[in-house]
Image (tube, rainbow, N blue to C red; front, side, top):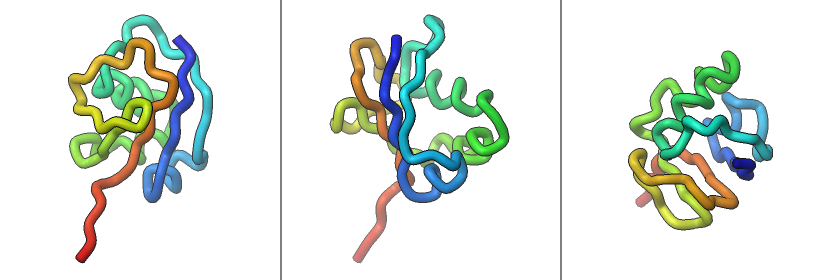
Length: 85
């Protein structure tokens, strides 16, 4: 499966890319598995996803939890939690 990945804020800074298209291995079927796989792609990704529990994800612009299946996704975005006042 090939999917477009988008990275925002400090996730983008750590990975060094804002977006990319990747072909996922067949064993990557959920958002959580995707984050674990991304950590294995090099030091920048390992740093970006070291705090995976705080990173938010969206599949095709809809918020997704770590256990959410990614089958059929065209775009998956990762971003840190948003705060404001």
